[in-house]
Amino acid sequence: MELLRLLDHDKQVEEEQKNQIHLKSLKEAAIHGSVQLLSQIQKENSQIFRSPEISSMPENPLHAAALLGHLEFAKKLLSISPELSKSLNSNGSSALHLAAAKGNAIMVKELISADSSMCGVLDGDGRSPLHLAAIKGRTAVLEELLRAEPAAATALTGGGESCLHLCVKYNRLPAMKVVLQFLEREDDRLVDWKDQNGNTVLHLAVAKKQIEIVKYLIDNTRIEKEARNANGLTALDLLLQTPGDLRDLEIKQCLEQDNASRTNRKGSAAINAGVSKSIKTTPSLQAKPSTKQPEIKHKHTDWLAKKRSALMIVASLTATVAFQAGLSPPGGVWQGDFAGNPNSTARADKAHKAGQSVMAYTLPDKYGQYMIFNTIAFLASLSIILLQVSGLPMRRRRWMWTQMIIMWIAISAQTLTYFVTLINMTPKHVENTVYHVAKISVIVWLLLMGVVFIGNITRGVLYVLRKYGYVEEKPQREVRVYEEEEEDDVL
Image 1 (cartoon, rainbow, N blue to C red):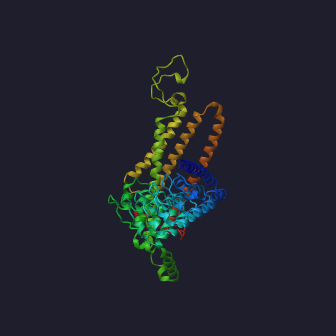
Image 2 (image 1 turned 135 degrees about the horizontal axis):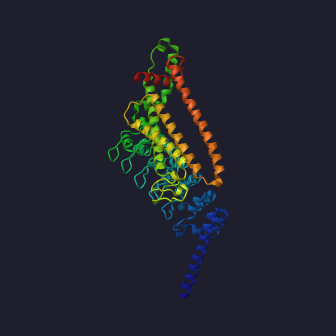
Image 3 (image 1 turned 135 degrees about the vertical axis):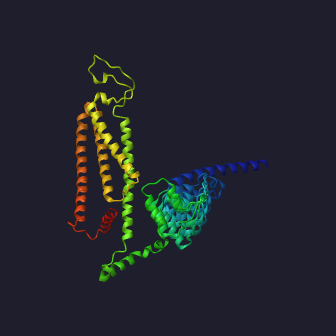
């Protein structure tokens, strides 16, 4: 009996050693995608694919094949052991999770055919393969997953987010379009789903200032624009509470547009074409005033608002740079007081106090140029900011042009400040090279400024000539005509 027990023990040890060798070979085959080695292992030890060791591995061979994209190896392995598709790695991810994150649609399709129920399984981070595909923007993978398992679209993450929330969170508009097109055929209630903070996808898109996503949601879905989050805020309320920038106006217009215009948007082109045709063929209608003037006025207001916002931002940045340049001149400032050396003729040995500019003593003429140009840039920028916040009526285009000319002066002065600094901070041994580069740059800049100046002068002259009837208005520029008429009304 003892002999038989020893023989059984030796046999078990031999089997374990054999299994360990085959498991190691199986890992190498998965890494290299060797179908031939996989077939050889199957012939030598077919039972190893059903052993608990292979499913308890941190990364089983199917995970490696899915991650590395070895399709033929994965097909062969699934035909031998389909149960491996259910196996999870140390992070709780299946092979389908890994293939979806990598964006391998063919591999995903093969894994789904083995077991489509894995589409809704959550990994250790609470995400399904569909969620990972949405985060990475894998549109082809999303189509395969939604086609195989429609219910996976309604699965939520561990944080209560839908796949649409993830598309917006990671700015994946193409992926969101795929999901929404599928939901349109199935059930579009998911578009109004709220996460744990009560935010819909529209709340998130507005908070992140994602204009394209906001437009797509409003134009192509029946999302509830008045839905409130956990703080009782609508998407528009959320927009008004976030720091403002140039995108706010466009987003606000999208959120405030009528539902009727949204539903009829697709047919508006045909209606407008019909109206235009009837106006051309009916003489009595041609003499009537256009009903489009309110829309043109709105465009005029938008133009002015965008220009004001852009001018305010550029003026603020220019003023900040000029202020900093005034406090930190080239060469810095003296770090201590000095009574002066009466026997020395060097300017640096003259009496000075801590905090005074070094350049003012070593290069007084250049320092004067530097401070003059920098002061012009600083005061010009502050003038624009003062005009913007003064509350004066600045809704006419001529006032906007005046501010643009002031900004042109500020930018030109800032450029000259830079060149003065560059030339006087350059050592002697590279002075010629830098001087020539600076000279060419100044010439190019002056040419550019000349083009801008001539363009604005031309526009001003044409405006005066059109206003007094010396030049006929172009009929296709209805917006510009109405803007000039509005200026006269304001006057």
